[in-house]
Image 1 (cartoon, rainbow over the protein chains, first blue to last red):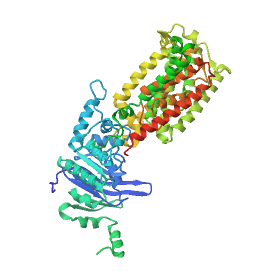
Image 2 (cartoon, rainbow over the protein chains, first blue to last red; image 1 turned 90 degrees about the vertical axis):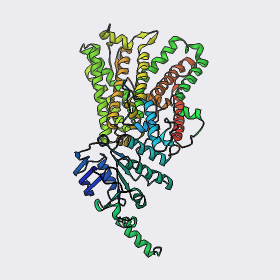
Image 3 (spheres, rainbow over the protein chains, first blue to last red; image 1 turned 180 degrees about the vertical axis):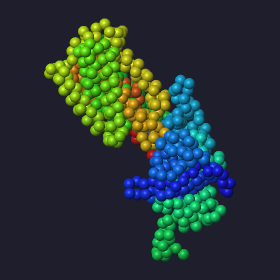
Length: 260
Length: 337
């Protein structure tokens, strides 16, 4: 569990982002080392989603710096982030129900033959192998993604992100829509990615899930970093206390007499 | 994956081949008219050439309209573009003595501009393309009629195209005949095959499906959704211009009313061909058979001796059944989501 913390694969320095009057992020600094899981925790509205959209090229920050493997980058689109090796599994998974599994897997990165046409045979073989590594047997690559379960689509999105050589893998709330067994499976994928030497950023508001796989924990609160701990320095319940909203929850439990 | 498949194997196979229904439909329509009107000319070479010509002229537009619909957008200005392109091409050829290729080049340039404006307006305003291109439908038709009135002193046609283009190679390539069939039929078939390969086997084709299936997801995966859509709006205007040119050369004149209702006919053909109104699903081959059904029904009615107005009722019924079949397809494709 205690993977050595190596050089940061991605760093964000003093990132700020406003939407009209609302400052979603204020001076946020975050770094994610290779071969480690950095958990980004926070309540709804803490700025987690905005931060990952900045890291993945969906939003441009108003100020601050982004560095990938030590050199400064500026992403104008998700495509540029992907090309820099920053791959994101969005909460909505970015899968297209009416398209086949193989077409979804390669959307935006279709392998070409010498004729400039897409090599769908190679695509199917590659998708089969990549999904196989995640413990999923692909029976029919032309099956529409809409027929898959939530957990299967999650696995597809993670396998896709991993396959395209991500050095940074960002997972936005990968467990929130899943059942207990599927969530455990998704967390296993997180460990697989870490063991491959990938810098994983795991966004969640579930402390149990974060503590199960995390090496480092960054807590966001109202658009700023309110706490930063490594695994050795914090227990699961301390982590829970660091999250905003948990104090209110404990007071509620005390007042209703359900807490000891 | 591990999900149990829904329905028997052959049914799932069919659902993944959206062109199966329109191909079967085209055969059924052909059989219907062959039985009812086989003795009155439907089955003759001339009868076949008649409905193939109608199918081809609609089919060329349907190719682009299908791609655009799969990408999640509509273009209601196709019919008006057809009228505008006819005048844009015929006026300089007849009145200014330009060669045919120059007149066509001028019309294609004008169409590219219209397609670009349609596309950029839809992307920049994020308004439904239905509304944006409905506005273009009126604007283009109005400008075409007013301009033609103005320069011809009140006429609604630019005539004299036959004399102005006599002996031109382009003219015979577009409006001539081969093996008893109009040239448009061969253009239609060739373009259908090319577009079909592009949609099924090219990177751009996969992006078209992605853009219409879920524009947000596609763009997160690095697909240049805006560029894909703008290119398709331009292609749609260009396809209308090709059909306008063929029409003007065949008729010998450009009429300001040319192309009316073509936008709805092309959408009808695409939907009969299995393309979803909501985007993300459909094929070029399906659209071609949709156009073929349209051609057979519109010409077949004459051979039955029935009132030709039955055509529209017949077509409406086919459209409705196609939409119902398409809805069945989507429901099953999304069964587990």
